[in-house]
Length: 595
Picture 1 (cartoon, rainbow, N blue to C red):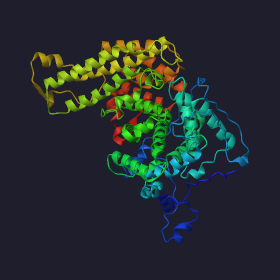
Picture 2 (cartoon, helix red, strand yellow; picture 1 turned 90 degrees about the vertical axis):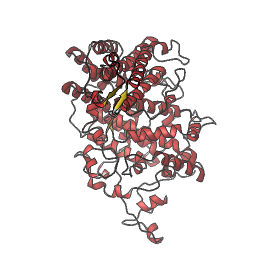
Picture 3 (cartoon, rainbow, N blue to C red; picture 1 turned 30 degrees about the vertical axis):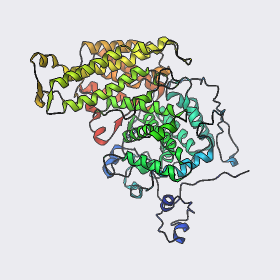
Picture 4 (cartoon, rainbow, N blue to C red; picture 1 turned 45 degrees about the vertical axis):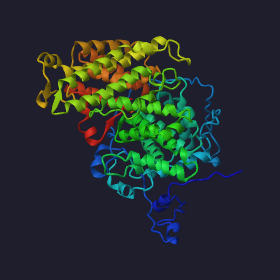
């Protein structure tokens, strides 16, 4: 029987750069000295995206920012959610293996591999794609960043050395993995036959896949009041998962060279055999990082870079053709584009979504926003256009002089978007081509809630940008100068009867759905935005109670961050944009992921 290849990631920097096996002799390795090379030594690698204060100590454009310091959370009662997978193709089995075996948990499933797919279930193929493949875009290891890592002060509860974190015992590791497969993966989307387990099980026998599972599960357990040890374990395993991607964070430029990254992928695809599927590994790791940020706090300094890179990979003609050969890849594209769109809707600089509108799928497809988050594709596409509208409005009202015809055209686009949102019921399928786990009435209510949240945003935009529009038309103005124009970004929320009516409708309808329904647990941005727009004491009490229920149900850190923003909007009377543009947020390179 062929012995399993044991790979180590503890080699010296020089051997890692050369992609050579290191003998790990301390303080310098023999491979380097015998070949006349200078050994780069052994360094510790820490995960990126850690704490706001660390940004001050790093000259790099990205990384080491984003995670708020730990605060003592009130203990809340955990509402257990249990969903059974409707897919008979998936079989999960957890059993303790003999210690000499070297593996902790055996996870088996029936194969769904077909001849036209890349076989990521093949360990040799995956290890080739991972350990030699990720370097195709990360050729030059950022030794300066790693060598100065000790100058960055971690939060007091994180050890200075990850060696201080005790290795998981097999029984504990089994428990964390079981938590992932029994609960965490069911929180990721509302799809009744979740493709996520099927996709990840193809990586199940590889250490990296296990690190993905352990990092996400550990962070969820930490947010569930599981203790600081789970937080440390989550960081340790996400570091293992992302140790290659950290090399992206090596530029002091304001923008990463996305075209250059894509070009390197293509060059390596030509040079070496089996490199044409490495892009899928990178896409998956981008997804895992974003998901880790959502589970932990919903705050990320790298989300824009990762969303943009994922979009560039998906839209490249060569990679797009290859993605179509991997059936589960549509799942990644749909979910990442969903996250991209809702984060664009709250971005204080009104950025446009990076992904194509085609990533949402089709309502008749198994994988689409209908099944992922409960919002019909047509309605979600309208929200996508609303994000584009915010960007166009910002550009228009930043000019020194704006023709009244441009304002009229812009106003017409906003009214058209609102009209499309009002027709949400036209896009909810009575009889989906694939059997849905949710009743038609519940899916209709869910679509209505997404629509109401979108309409609330249109009301805010109309009040801010076009409140004086009728008088401008009446005065027959030809153009407006900068002093007459509204601010390019709203500084406060506007409360009126229209807003109050929509808020009341939203929460009355939201309260009729089960809080444990996946349709509700994925409805983060709509609930967040409707809560921020609540004005009366009664409306705010209702909104807060439903936010708290959502948090108790899913125990995801992003809900807490959303609740803190809502609390700040209420107390300061300012807009979401003004908060997310300030200190601790975009001013420090941090974005909110309300998903």
